[in-house]
Image 1: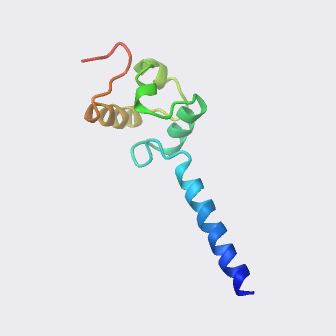
Image 2: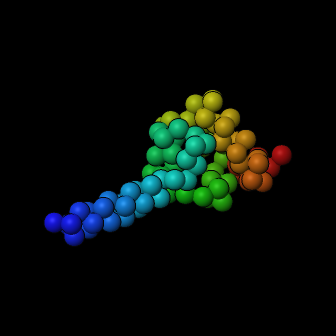
Image 3: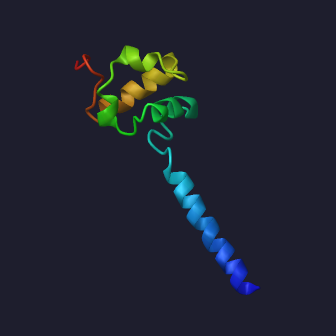
Length: 87
């Protein structure tokens, strides 16, 4: 019985770690709906995000004015800019 409890705890920790890692791009920076929209487009890094224009990202579900501002600030802090917007 003790072995089953230990095995269950190990499986739980593996599941929790793998779940937390998925979708962690921009976690704590922009809301989940916006992150899901990026994930749907296979945008999982700032470098991939820089291949898009600001207008293209604004058209995605979950991106309002506040979310875009947070994203732009975070990108600028990391020296990354939207396509055609390198100011």
